[in-house]
Length: 535
Image 1 (cartoon, rainbow, N blue to C red):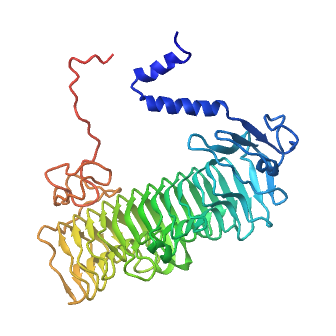
Image 2 (image 1 turned 90 degrees about the horizontal axis):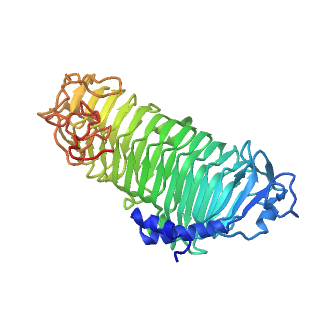
Image 3 (image 1 turned 90 degrees about the vertical axis):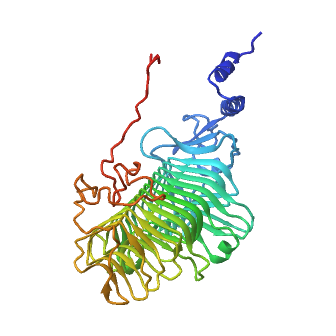
């Protein structure tokens, strides 16, 4: 006799789903079969069962008094408010690797609100917890050292679809760990949350104060940061813990929107294997605050910055860069290494005379390519004698105020190929005691003073024999037309196999100069379908 569910099992095998996946699915379904939904609302009663809207609990104190199991859901009524102060802060329970404990909403209307009173330090506090989800909760408050969500030595946490507002809290989300207890912080995702007019320090901060545990596998994605008085995202760690090998690692910050941020959009004090991708940043910084850059990348080993849009970076001088690759602390042992900066659109970095789209201040072996940099005081800059092994390929700089490319004093040799240097007073300027770069196959146009200039000798340098000086005929989106002299005028580069639109180079007989290849349209391989039944 076939047992019940046999046909379901055979269906898994029929479609090639492995037995291990089948067994995992069965375990998951079993957990969910025994999961319980609990309800909390204003006007409920803590003497109720909590098992329905009609039997809803009333207070967070009642929720904290329970012990929940994996896959349980605790749902707060939409449109209701809990005053965290008269009531307790929420203290989540742990789920398991198979199923989380979820704190979420039910009903209709606005998200349930946790209003954190001035007598409370946080709205949610979790210590040594794991496998729980915070979903669709609104937070507000006004105490200067508050943390709306405080994750103390936690892992496997999701914070989704939640809203944070209130000008004074120190942090909206704060993840912290030290050496007591000695644990790692890992697998934390913050997704589709909104941060508006909140956090006097950072909207999100991950802080490491441990020589024996690190922060890793963190993802912040699809969040909206608006009108912040300080920084949007910071990974904080001091030199002591970095030197002990505990720099945060495997960090992905992707698809976020950041508008009207008064300080830095994203800052790392140190890190390893960091990705910043597809973030849209506008109006970063404040004219009255010094040392602001949109992406401040300090002492990161292996860094990818791609497909971001950064516009209008403001600061009182110095700085004002869209992206800066920098060192950490006070030692040259803490340089950024092996960074790739590609396919970013960077504009309106005009705060100071040296504000730029990309500055390599102290970094080695960086590759900067396929970026579009427009309407900045300077296009790209290489600074400091420690910054060795860096390359700038296939970038388009246009409508620059002063220098499209700057080699600062004492900066070592770098490689410049296939770039468009349009506008400004100089195409490439090498400051006194800077090393003349390897330069060829570049386009220089409309540089009002010099194309390639050496300040040490106060003389123009002869550009490479394959570089060009006629108008590249850039279109409104900074691509090139079929009659552009930049078409097929570049050199093949193994580091730059694709263009700004991720399409294969070359499209013609040779690489084009600039971020775009001419004719960058999607093409499809022709497939022979003869003899194939497409029904």
